[in-house]
Length: 195
Image 1 (cartoon, one colour):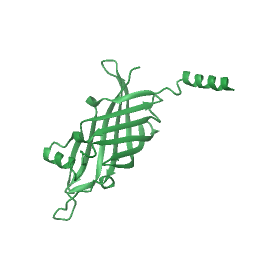
Image 2 (cartoon, one colour):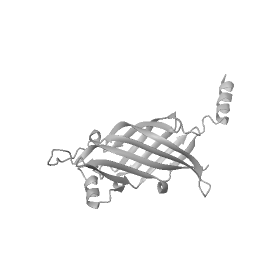
Image 3 (cartoon, rainbow, N blue to C red):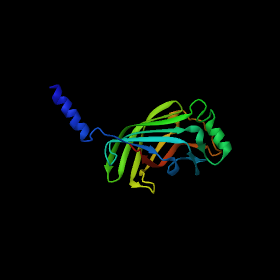
Image 4 (spheres, rainbow, N blue to C red):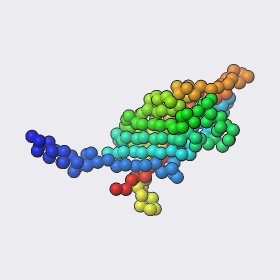
């Protein structure tokens, strides 16, 4: 019986069923951006410049892949240094205490064509909540150096109050200075790790 089980495991390994392809985020060709309403009438945008991401895939179409992503909160850039300092302080991210934003997938499912649904847990400001990203898979290609790349676009909307980012002030008309809903948009290129 043991020989049969051992033979089955070897057969599965040889067919590549357990083989995983690993990919890492190419920061030079990727962006992590966000936007939030300001004074109810417009939006302010920003980005995080330092981040790391990985994909572990068992299939060429990435269905059922495992995905992790980590962001250095202190790398925030809204093109206004005073605003960045405020966002990094205790009113918002409290980055000295919570320097990382982390995501770990629980599911990555192909819906149809190049559309996917990514679900997982986002940890921000010491709070972990489930989130869902709508993902568009752009395909794979080789660059001029022979590296295999895969491209994705992903977006979601989170309620910052869920993560205890609750600072706000009211305008003269009674509206919120900063909206509660934050749109997160990622344009990511991943490089296949070479064996």
